[in-house]
Structure formats: C-alpha cells, structure tokens
Amino acid sequence: MSLAEILNGPPEDAAPALLGRYVRANGVTLRITETEAYAGTAGDPASHAYRRRTARNASMFEGPGTLYVYFSYGMHWCVNITCSPVGVAAAVLLRAGQVVDGLDEARRGRPVKDRDLARGPARLCKTLGIDRAADGTNLLDGDGPLVLVEPDEPQSVGVIRTGPRTGVSQGADIPWRFWIDGDPTVSPYRRSPRAPAANG
Image 1 (spheres, one colour):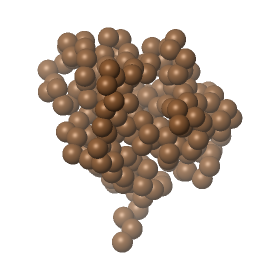
Image 2 (image 1 turned 90 degrees about the vertical axis):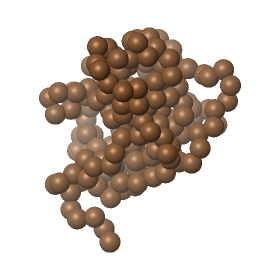
Image 3 (image 1 turned 180 degrees about the vertical axis):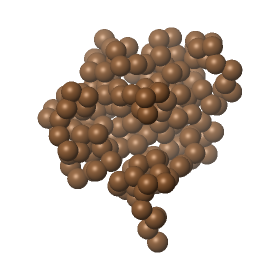
Image 4 (image 1 turned 30 degrees about the vertical axis):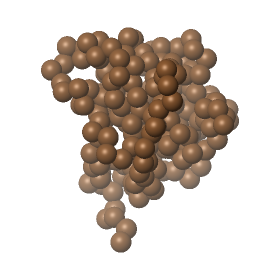
C-alpha cells in the first residue's frame, strides 16, 4: 500500500506507517522516529478539531498529506500531516526524528547534541525550518516546503512501540503515540498533570 493510500485512512494506521520515512525541508533530511495520532471530530477530545472547524485547524480538513502547523504555548511551532478523506479532520503529529543529512543547517545556531536536534515536536520544526507558512501545503505533491525523500536502499524500521500520548489532558490513555523502540532520538513520555490518574 502506498503512503498516499495509508494517509487516506485513519490516523492510528497512518501514524506508525510514517515511522522510518524520510522527509526534507530547508536543506535538512530527517528520518521520522516518533509520531502521535489525532482523530479530530471522531470522538478524540485531545484533537484541535474535536469541537468544530476553525480558522486555526482548517488544514486538518483538507485531505491526505496536508500539513497542519500550529503554534504551541505561544513559543513553538509543531507540524502534523493530515490523513483521512477531505472533510474528515484527522492528523499525525511528527514528534521526533533523526537528522540524516544537512546537519549544519539543522543546528540553526543551536548548541544541541545530534540526537536532540529533533527530539520533540518543537525541536523537530525548528530543525526543519518549518513555521506557519507551511500550513496548508501538501507533503505528497512535492511542491511544498516539506517533501518525502526515498532512501537509496530499503530501510528497516525495527520494533514499533505504542503507548499513551504525551502531555494531553483529555484522551490521555488512548495509546496513539508510536515510536521506534530503542531509538535515541525518541522524546521522553510526559503525562499531563491535568490528566486523570492513569488507568490501572
């Protein structure tokens, strides 16, 4: 199944399918190592589109491969790849990645260890040079700032783990965070202090 077909389906299928894929923006190539799925209006209270379509979240409704870029806590940009058919709000947050090309550009003046350059969604956006200008562009058409890159040889993803999403206060126990087991660029799990006590 192609990535375009996968992204036309539910986010919980698209999120693990993006692991190990390569994306490139502004001179930096990144291997995706961690993602989170958000189901929009389909019963996912942690999603920005849970209640309705707004000017902020409109890109989530624009169909497979559309980038949804938002400002987090008034400080950082975060990038999502929209999935599901047009009109259905769902997306995959890119949480972490490994820089595989363009290391000098990836630093962007930051004295950061290689493994930490894109370890977390805010750092990932900084590393790729992604901001609100990328919102509404499409990953799949090759014309936007963020594009897919096919590696020269097939890559092994390894073991994929799943668990609760990081930092959300609602839907906190839905196991829609996916990561490559043992990869040092994966971000640490942090449960929101506003979330109910963990099940069990």
